[in-house]
Length: 225
Ligand SMILES: CC(C)(COP(=O)(O)OP(=O)(O)OC[C@H]1O[C@@H](n2cnc3c(N)ncnc32)[C@H](O)[C@@H]1OP(=O)(O)O)[C@@H](O)C(=O)NCCC(=O)NCCS
Image 1 (cartoon, rainbow, N blue to C red):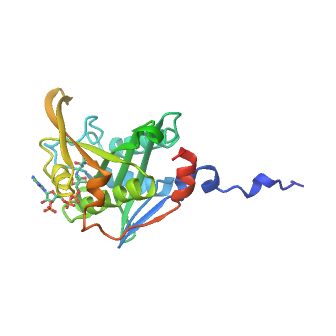
Image 2 (image 1 turned 135 degrees about the vertical axis):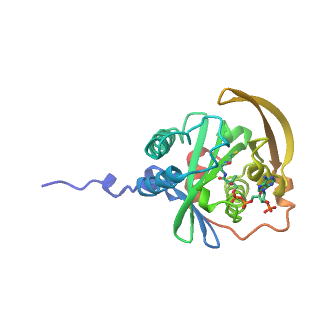
Image 3 (image 1 turned 90 degrees about the vertical axis):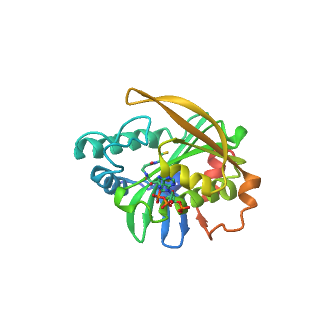
């Protein structure tokens, strides 16, 4: 006979509050990447994330056979899960679901966030889901989570100069240019644009969509925010 203890009632959300985080706007949701959602997104990435002659990422994880690309999504995010909560680092990647269908990933990363209150965002959508406004909406949603939910004061982002849609979303959302850097991408030097959006600039925007946040308080507590 097994004996029940007080700890038997602890849920995943109790132990790992990130799992309970849920951001909703219209038919788009940002959700914790459990294994089921991650597998579906790995399959989506394996179908393609960009044109063959483009490379939006510093690490070219989208090159290779469909199985290699899908596997690299799994291993990157399995590693990232454990790294979500470092002593000084925060890294959280949320699945993007539109009308019940997994369409991409929206992440954010920061160092000493309780002190700096600054994070950088990054994202991708499956190719067939691009160009329909989802990238803009999911960025608006994560900005709402960061500023309104987690009390950040600045959000930054980067995009290679030749990535039209990513620079397009960023400029449209009122970020200011924050310098450029030259990075190595697949053996070639490429310009990467840096951008920043302050809390004040975000608050001044009058066209922000309605966004509902769930499960934020336990995350703030865990991160000391
Ligand atoms: C970047 C990404 C997330 C954007 O999402 P999306 O749903 O395609 O973007 P949206 O439809 O919301 O908006 C794209 C904006 O860029 C603009 N745009 C598209 N191509 C452009 C180009 N070549 N030059 C300038 N602007 C361009 C669009 O006109 C649109 O702006 P608008 O709404 O003001 O017209 C998505 O395209 C993607 O996943 N790309 C591949 C991976 C990637 O690049 N990730 C980011 C790495 S930094």
